[in-house]
Length: 426
Ligand SMILES: [Zn+2]
Image (cartoon, rainbow, N blue to C red):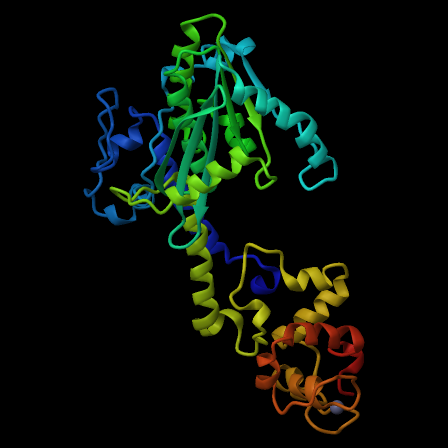
């Protein structure tokens, strides 16, 4: 039933949640008692309390939740600064300099007809002005992620002033998500721009979430990048009351040349060598999801009792998936009776002869039409009662067909009485 509903086993789900909690240890403040109880390389500061239950002692040390925290938490190499002075509510850059920061985020829906008109009449003139401005530095940032191998990411920015390219830079940032890479690109770009003497900094990127959070020092992925960006922007704004920062969203792959170029830079940067392996918090969470799916697949394929001996092993359910909505629910979810009939057929728990033979041996088991034992194979492949468009020798052959899932779904809708009590042997 879990496989049919695309819901992973609760045991694996809980395991994932426990490990996710372990990952969160990375975001704790340095004086947190949990960090004080963890072994190297976890670091806590002098304000952390003395913890009387260090790991590795006691009779049942292996089962301690701290072991799970240590085990799962160490996967992530990203660092956080939850209590940084830039993150103090009321004193953040966005609180202090609200009137000197501006976000241009309004745009027509992606893929809509208005988009190209908006780009040519509003966005492009605005960005051209910014790039050509002598008193402004405009940075275009972009991040890229390649799923293979190992979700490697690259971040790049290009800075322009008075129509001229000032600098272009790209770095590899290890394993992460595209959001991670976009944040690093924005942080790098701002670090460069805030060292320039100019009136305005324009930051242009195609990731809305990254633009919105680059100056948000509260806890989120790549929070440390935001903290550093806040500090740079604060120092730069403090020097002159006329200085301003503007953030612009621009769509990717819409022919905006600045964006296309920095996109290429970021893709190249993803292949640069890295000194040591880095893994962001978001990527570590992603790995847990991958692990859950792998464990589930393993259980479905190898554990004899899990799916049941007679589970109709259609390709649509192998591997079982938790990411997409269940194909069975999509096809039959609208009707309770249809879904029930479908589940009975796949699980071989329908009121048919073979089921009776197992559980109610004193009741009739033969197909009323054909006079042989009514089992699933008989119904799907041979019985004269039903309409079908295949001639096969066995169930094995049926499930190996490429379109077996579709065929079964079609069979169920074509023959509405199949696998119901109405067609049970009498
Ligand atoms: Zn029959």
